[in-house]
Image (cartoon, one colour):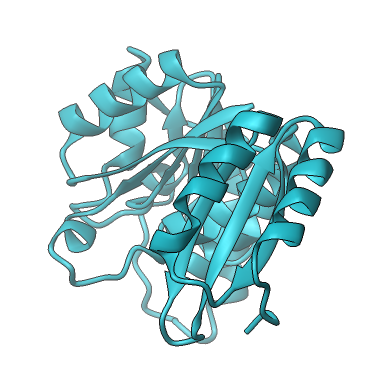
Length: 239
């Protein structure tokens, strides 16, 4: 299974907010054997969101979109996703009930909160709602596109409810070495050619080592490749 991540927000492009969502989702998908083929950040512009969503939906097995759910003027992610599939935003009964439950739960704490419930509960027509168990604005699933909140705590909680939809056959092994990266090139090229795996080398100057990531879909080849490297690379302890 391959996937693309689409993170939405002017604040991400301006550097006002760190894009931790992309890193977190990428790691969770990798844990599930999914190959992330694209990560794209786009501004709060309906046409741009729509174009990227439509393109990635056609190209990949799944698309995860995060950011811009809610009632503020820059919360237009749902508009963009609806435009990608040429459908309207319509109030969803299940989403509305969930929004109302949340508002009731926080009424004592925020007695003067003025929320347009219909707008909060509006999803692309035909979408399956994803209830927001950690916040207000619901997400949704439309075909192979999963729309999650931009607030990390809400996104992470909602991802738990759809995690089982993401399943791939890529596995990885990790090795750590203090050998200089340049000295490893020939061995890393050879292990890829011998075993049909992918190898990444990621220097970590703070930890004082290079992290080698060996990835593949065939467990036997992956195990053999890792063993081959272990015999030919000076290994160090993790961390």
